[in-house]
Amino acid sequence: MHFRSWGVLGIVALFFAGSMSAQPSLFAYSGGFPVGAGGIPSPGSDIYSSSIAVGDFNGDGKLDVVTANSSGRSLTLSLGDGSGRFSEAPGSPMSLLYGPRILVVADFNLDGKLDLAVSTFLGGIAILLGDGHGGFTPGPPFDPNYDAIVMAATDFNGDGKPDLAIAGESLNESIWFGDGLGGFSHAGYGSGIESPTSIAVADFNGDGVKDIAVLSGSYSSGYQIAVAGLSFLTISYTYRGQPSSLAVGDFNGDGKLDWATANNATGDVSVSLGDGAGGFTPAPGSPFIVGGKPFSIAAGDFNGDGKLDLAIDTGTSVAILLNGGLPAGSLKPQAIHFPLPFNQQFTPLPFGITAVASSCLPVIFASATPAVCSVSGETATLIGSGVCSITATQPGDATYGAADPVTDSFIISPAGQIIMFPHLNDQVLGAPALTIDATASSGLPVSFATPSPGVCTVAGNVLTIVATGLCTIVASQAGNSAYLAADSSQQSFTVMDASSHPAFFIGETALTGGVYYLRFPANANLFGYYNYQFFPILYHYDLGFEYVVSANNGEAGAYFDDFASGHWLYSSPSLFPYLYDFYLNAWLYYFPDASNPGHYTTNPRYFSNLGSGKIFTM
Image 1 (cartoon, rainbow, N blue to C red):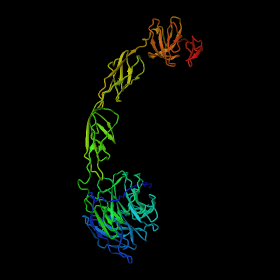
Image 2 (spheres, one colour):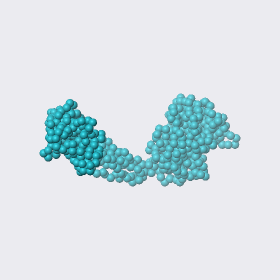
Image 3 (cartoon, one colour):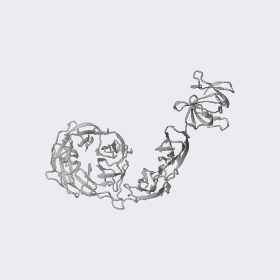
């Protein structure tokens, strides 16, 4: 069940004093007709109507009008002819036991024929089921503990059955769910506003859920409209016209909800046009004089021209205001200034766009070339190269007509890109497959290929060594609509076999599993056990990983970048296990592991600083 938690979050100004008769009028008075004189009037009183409702009650496709004759204890049905004219239906007025107060129209029993909910002055609420020919019969009884001075009908809980919102003399409006047979059950309370004057139901914020607009106030404090569940601009406005009834509809055809009120004290109707964001301005010609004491108002297209008209119950007659629309030229013109963007190279970064309407109303942007550029609000994002066209529009409001759209176009050229391809180290035949990586400045994926398939192969970004020799890998990026193709980048490295090693490895002894050991021939010092599967990175089983660089000094010496400490070391066959530490600027002695012959200390590694005499670990 979808049921809104009603909370009054905002108040919208609706009423505007003063006349705008010098402007073109949205509505024109089309005359009126008296309410029915039947029924049983109260002694010494005239027939007086208190409410009006609109619907096709006889099934001819034309809107009719029904009025509640409170003093006459009757209902008058006037049938529309589709041109804005009405005549009293046969058998009308229809007598009631109590004087009717408020009328609401809906198909409460879901038989395809319009029914009435009628609140009375003494007898609570009655449901009258329509027969589709202009007649009515009593429906299921309503809870006798409730009456109503205001009512509205819609499907609040989304079950496809009309529900009611009602409010009594001192209570805020309550929600009643319909059962689809003409019966109702109490479901909860609404906005919390006590003693409302009128309520109307519509989807004011376009979320697909019906909202309740509540008209309330007093002659001394002013009147206001609160919309339950919305955060519209909060304004209170004092208006001396004593608005007594509220109608909602799109009166100027701009797709945004507008308001209309029947003003009892001033004998006129106020119409305010909405901007869809909570703002309202008086319609041209508002307020519209209808005379009498307007008490109730309803909207409908009475002459079939596709525009919402208004029917106003003035107490003794019904006034019809036909909506003629605004004549050509009645709205102020406006123009859009949209500076032309410069031609530019593609960039993935969004950028702002600006345009100004002479009316100072906000400008709306849209992309006319979505394959090249997109627009969100006032931000454009490039998608590819080509011609980007952006259209600026301003639809106008109650004062300004729509501006002529302005489309600006500019050329987007593809951007260049480069490939970053890191150096590849020499490898030993039999090394496991390698994962290679390269990055394009565009962020697009890089492809790899090799012109030396006899030495190495590549699939995706996995490189496999197949023979000794020179392996060359070429990285490329072909570009797309946004980027030009990148210049290819290549890296080459040497693949060696197991007998290819630095000079100081001469005399090594091969063991199983690719492991070697070396006893330096000059002094029989044991260099230790190692492998060079990832040469020039040597894995020494005691020292750990070392990056080896030949010293080329005639004594088979080598420099080691010690991975564990980050220190640069030097040694040679005639010196090991003595090493020079370039970080400490001292000669070190690497202690053998007494408990493990043929190995040196590890975890931790013990060294003696020959300069300071201190023993330390590294």
